Image: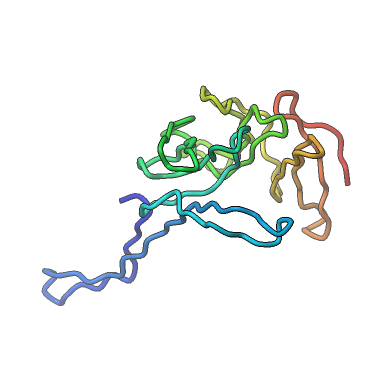
Length: 186
């Protein structure tokens, strides 16, 4: 079953019975209202109420919904779900890609995420897919010493980190969801 691991199996001497620990990996997405100039979270609501891994990607442009990465159908999929929970729509699903949580581009047009082919996990790339759905497109291959990415709405830019000099330094490089890698920032 997706999101469930059986660990520490122990069989009886005659081999007819098995005991194990059922370990579930699930994460829920909650929303709430920021009050007191953004210093207090109130009216928290759970959007995902299931036993699967659900991770927030970002908000829709109108703030009426969120994009969620989930394995609820047995494969990594990105959904658009309204905040009131009344509507869920698949934006992207791929049985071939191992998808990791991503970000929404500063212009709100793209979902940007890290993924690799399930059969060759040693090679990964940064992908984009329209917030309206479609086929994902690789933007650039993932650097060997990947250290994460972020997109800033106010700065209208995305950037990724790369560990260098045996992990003693970090370089930051900007990228555009359509044009690819840009200049090194730090």
